[in-house]
Image 1 (tube, rainbow, N blue to C red):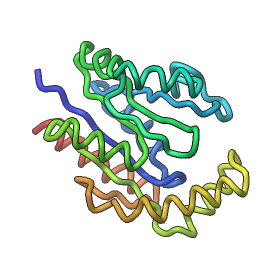
Image 2 (cartoon, rainbow, N blue to C red; image 1 turned 45 degrees about the vertical axis):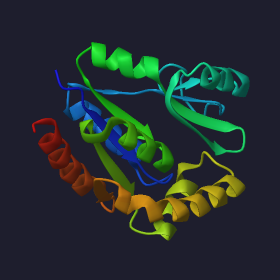
Image 3 (cartoon, one colour; image 1 turned 90 degrees about the horizontal axis):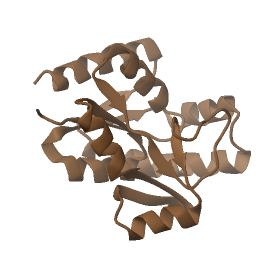
Image 4 (cartoon, rainbow, N blue to C red; image 1 turned 30 degrees about the horizontal axis):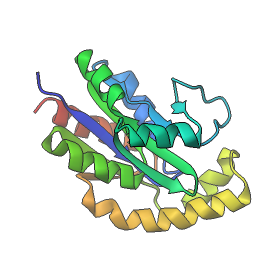
Length: 188
């Protein structure tokens, strides 16, 4: 059996999680990889469903034990990573893994999985649209939005390193486009 992975990365507010959820509904043989993080949950996020929420100390302990495929300190004291046990769990079920990760994590996963991976960079049509989406999401403070927008400008410089760039201007068109791209990758 050929183990494959789908890697989706994007700046905050580009629509990555919405697109990943759409694909999970469309393709029954793909499964979401739950990332670990040291940040607190937001809104209705649930431990073991949206993320594995760990304290900073727990996260650092797992790093020392070599339990991550990849990890990164995205913001000071805020770690994100992919547990090796999560990859093993999904592949044992015979499914393709779907990663919803930040840009650096996406590039690290692409390097780790090589030809088994399709990496997709999702971008908003512009930085101003991205800022508007973050404001409308109403989950972050103005200070956090400013940080995310600044980081987004930096992250967008890495788009060309991904296998495919999807511009999410109109969601229904983005759904159609990514469905074709994923279908082609899975059936090769």
